[in-house]
Image 1 (cartoon, protein in one colour):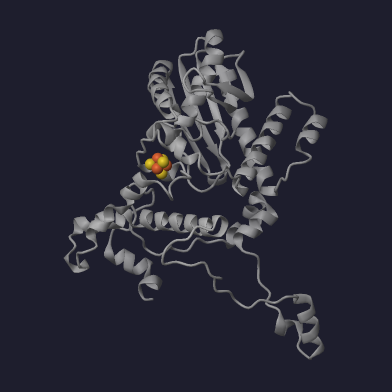
Image 2 (cartoon, protein in one colour):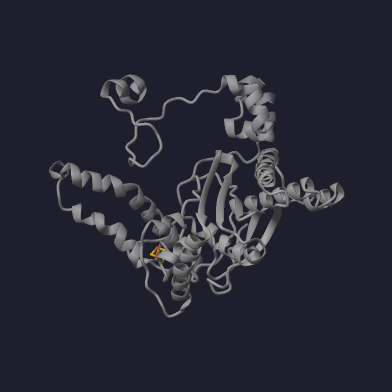
Length: 389
Ligand code: SF4
């Protein structure tokens, strides 16, 4: 569950563990709740209610009371069923090993022994002999979230150990991400000693980040991975992005393969950073009347648009045009159709009609999971349509 309101939140820990200055710099930006965060909160509430119903912790009436006000889509209903089944399966496995294993749903986890005022919520916490598993539901579908060395889950695990260790003599901790919308399940098991060792280091960094006078900003992967709000104004981030400027004065034909690699490695990042800064500047110009020398605020270009489609259709039909002349009939796109039918029904009814065409060839980092197109002939054959354009 989100814990966004804590100063040193577990969800933001990747940032403050790597960049102590981010806490102060981000505080200059207001908290905003995106549509995705609202959707995630709803999915968590629904998943929680479904698990509590399945575990007989609430009655069916209680379940309906808790879910009546939620804005549930058909997709969400299916994905949270998958989440419930996954958690129950993990719990059944724990019961097979330990007959008095226990499960806690939406358990508040206090890790303030490591992080000032640190707390979060474990979506599902399963305790069996010598072992604890924390399952975290991620409802996003942007990027797969890994449980490996995941600081948010490790902080939750420290909170869970604080709560359960004296009762159960825990030896290992498993942290699992369940991300149903992109079929991502990621898990890491570490010993309690390893976790405590990590916690000691995290505690030192948390104390540093909690110091309001400390403004050391250290840029890295965590800036983008953690969606740092300070990116448009952060000097450390800007300096990291501007490393590319050293190539400005060299004509392209003189670039070596090594230099080209360095540029393409950073090109996407550079474009994203430029957009962040532009969006920030626009927001400042519109909302705070900030002037940027050499720039002015104007109306953007726009296209003509109908004011009243119903009235237009009536008028055209009155003037002798038929419905087929004036309307274009189109099938809903795959995303809208999936929302209409629900994922399972969509696959049952339409699976045979769906193909995934080749995407245009693109250069990506070797860490990308996609298979390499490893021969010129194969690339030419498979991607003929793109190459001839
Ligand atoms: S953009 Fe990066 S370097 Fe700058 S404050 Fe945020 S996390 Fe730190």
